Length: 297
Length: 245
Ligand SMILES: Nc1ncnc2c1ncn2[C@@H]1O[C@H](COP(=O)(O)OP(=O)(O)OP(=O)(O)O)[C@@H](O)[C@H]1O
Ligand SMILES: [Mg+2]
Image (cartoon, rainbow over all chains, first blue to last red; front, side, top):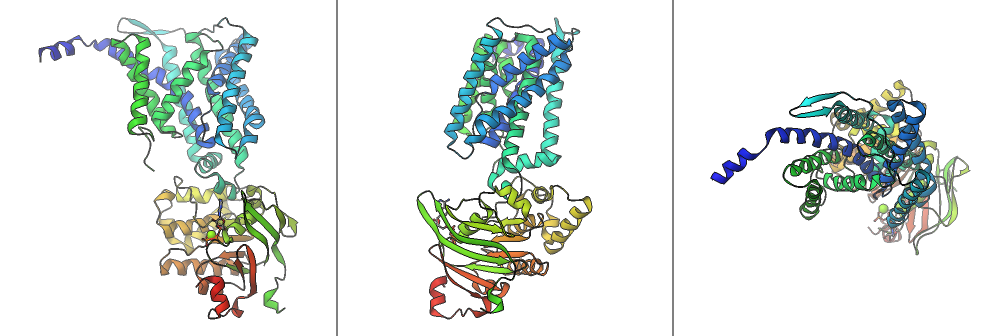
């Protein structure tokens, strides 16, 4: 009894609040990466292994566009646009011809694309990480910390983008096409929906979302050819835990897992805290393989 | 040939179609026609290839030989979404409602086409809601939560949103209670009155003979018999054998 009381007293409330803010901020970027991934999964039925490289290329495009325009937000929009076009072209050239084949073909293709893009980035941009500074320098006081407003803005912006995508899927004509195609692509075709075009559009949208997350994250860690790996791994976990292809589930799972990791980091070393997400993944696969937050079918 | 056995103005012609699933040869040279405004029945035992014939017309499976013509033009190889836009509506035997889409959204998949005015949308929706009032009641409900009969009505209503010139109807009354069968029977007559062609696959022989002008009987992937619906005698032992009744 005494030890429990002692433990409760030892919980640093201020640190927990800071970690809550951190967890939500990371969770929102992760949710943005994972929503693109889960949208593409819903359409193609296979995981896009090149998603992390779209994130990475998006960050590079942001750096380049920033150097040219000097405006971070303009660079963000340009990067999203460029990656959307690139994603569409990539889908048409490499994945569209594989529609209707064994999913293994598509899995291998996206894996191959990921390797090619990673090595291309290394060759083109070199091994030294590029830096891009935060567009908002202001900070506010959070207990003993000076907390950057930029992080709060990122969380809000990611939330706004996800909200916009949700509204699009829910109400827009093309959003209804996407949902119909996700559920039954044969019947969608029979209803006159140009399914190959929907595939390309969703891939482009997913690529643009990855690019935006890449640019938003770039000021924290720098931009290099490997930066997509860690994010895509976390995003995979989120997509599985949230229920494959379930957009709402992915968002909840992203925040859930990021919060868990942030809290774990209070007691554990940050590198060990990552283990928490794997534990959640394994438990999900064991006990609820359709996802923790999946609507029962 | 009597007037009833020939289609005056063929809208769909299936010409000597051979279709395979992998290595199994399912259709062995099926030929049939459906005239404009005509209701044509397609009968036969289980597994003779009735659904496969409809899928071949819809472009969902490709014939290895033969051709399908629509309004005189060859449509073999045309992707299904273009056929839907040309005016072929498809109601599959397993209904294939978009389960997570609401009733309205299911209908929208056929309405969100180029050149459908707001007024036209309203007319089309009002029409199906008049014939299938239950769909109006459930318009905000997810398709997957509807009963089997309601799903069947939604599948037909959804195809009607395309304003098709022909509807391929695969076993629309299967497993439905009599009141719903009557509603389906009614909508067939309504569509017929609007000169929409119908190719009707059914296990319900009396209903098919009543609703259709002509019927084809399939056996083992071939057309075995073809005549005016009124000329079929269900008590004929040969017919009984073809239909397995
Ligand atoms: N996707 C498929 N792959 C392989 N074989 C199939 C496939 N679909 C149908 N078949 C086979 O093709 C044959 C014809 O099937 P089809 O569905 O056209 O029959 P049907 O006349 O509609 O039968 P029913 O009255 O039972 O609906 C059947 O033997 C069936 O097993
Ligand atoms: Mg069938």
